Length: 401
Image (cartoon, rainbow, N blue to C red; front, top):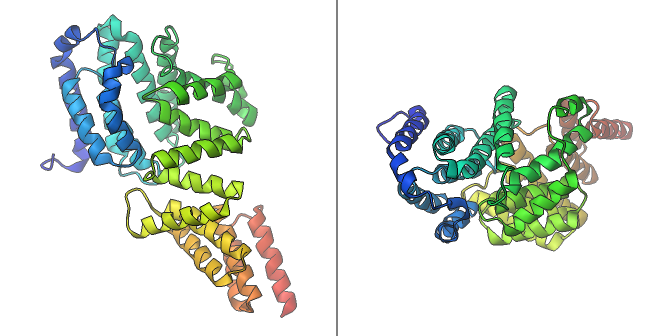
């Protein structure tokens, strides 16, 4: 691959997958007794690689996936897993786009191989539909990300995912893997119009969902599935924490994910967030310092997004303990991390500045305090609480002069 321009690599991956589809079709005929997604021997074989993937040991995981691809060239699973590996390189910081092309290429390869099975081998129709729904769904997630905002492509991929998901619903013998997509659909097809009234008319064209059933399905997948188990746990954790006001259960999942995959920066960051919201400050201090230490040592996946959270938590922790110099140190670090990733409109950034202004005011550094409050007024919107707070504090400082 080193002889090809980097931009050509995704194209080459797809062309190779195309060639494999044609040359391996005879092998499909021989192996139709194997339903890979439900095969226990296969799950045992791939288990360590999946653990390595979620623990950010990508080189080890991908080595196993590539061997798996040599053995089952005709099946979409190895291409999908290689794409999932690229996806998790994106997860800690979705502003990073350098993994996008390889991710799309692997998902497109998975789609191409799955379409081959779907059209030519009836015995594999449902399993192929599962991978078609999953690959289109992941592509849709990327295109709809705040940093990409390619709504047209996201809509096209989402429609394809839903179409194949409906095919999967015809049979349930691959369950609970199949329940993952159905669970997400059941939950969000109700949640979206509840929270975005303007989208209600669009939902009239889709199958009616059931939010509680969706939660039950995601719980079942997180307990009983193999390939989709961790992904289901991630969604369940986020839903329970952000939308269902079940912080206790969200904390249990976050703790489990961090303990099971201790080198996954996304799980580490989320665990720190729920420690903060639950008020477990002693453990929060330990985990936040560990996150910053891992950033300093350039550990894979640990970067400014995680640092912004960790530094802000430590700033608040030490401010509450009246260790003002320590607090200033970490609030300043939170500001630095936020500026590195262009997150200067976020609450963590703005309230770090306000806290720095407040601490400097307490320490008699009025000029510094004013500078921080003025910076908040520059960066925040006029309707933001941070803007109003900074404006009020500046007025009080001017009265005292």
